[in-house]
Length: 79
Image (cartoon, rainbow, N blue to C red; front, side):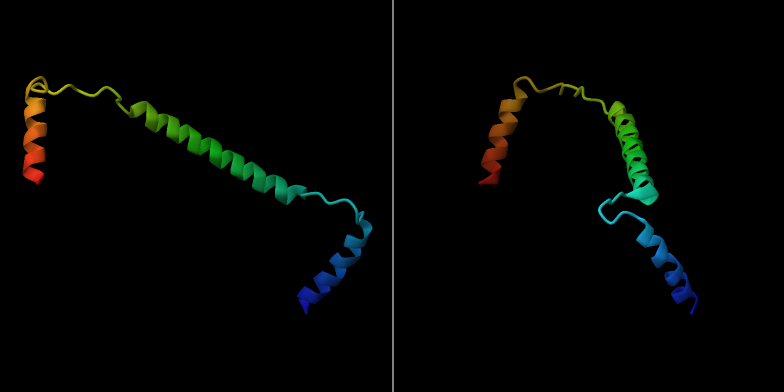
């Protein structure tokens, strides 16, 4: 019975608003602000993780002439 009483008090308040004007209100702003903060935190975390990545690959010590032999042996072994 409490829910019906609350509903009867809210319905007359809704009649006072302009029927042609729709706004997101405070709840819409809070949801948008929460999404914005979440995206900001994700971007900050991504930048921190990308800063830790080492993009310089260490060269193989025997990659000079041994690379051609390894490629040929691997192709022959696969058949």
